Image 1: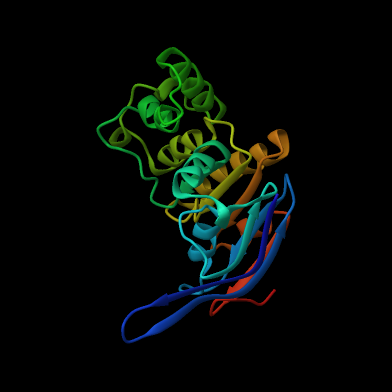
Image 2: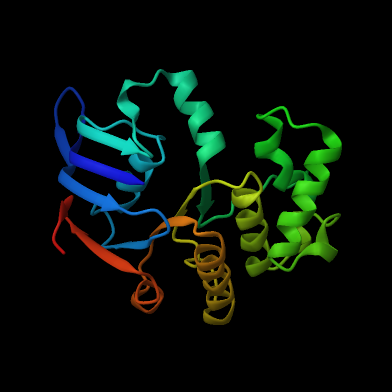
Length: 221
């Protein structure tokens, strides 16, 4: 499902060159749940952004579902992200002026899904994360755990094959964090969704199928 070959990422300015990732080789099978761990600044989020086509590697190849994505143009990659990938962020990234349902509908707008279908699909996604009774609420009326559930519903509303989660439990207490993790595990087991998760939490990482560790931009385990 996801294959990285000799992926490097170098950030350059006029005076300095910083290597964020060095020779990353990674194979993730369909339906696999992978955790990425490492200290702050080791390249975890950079790696996730490259897998999610939010950033380009300086070298190497990113292949998702048989597609060598550096060969795609910007428009094609944006379309691929919208149709094949779902994103979950530590800070939720919900739009405060939109209702819960409207937040979840957003990815469907870019697919030009009709209003009636958008509403149905959003409500089904919210029901799957236990928030069917919150569709008309606004983000400031929700707890942190509920906000993250909305973010998960938004990520899965278009039925993506891959979910990329950047510290999805990082801003939550242990109870809420475990609830969110249980939802991700259920998505993985029931829907065969491939999930790649960045985390600092060893206990969360141990619940996944495979764990890799980064240190100073290099894969060490």
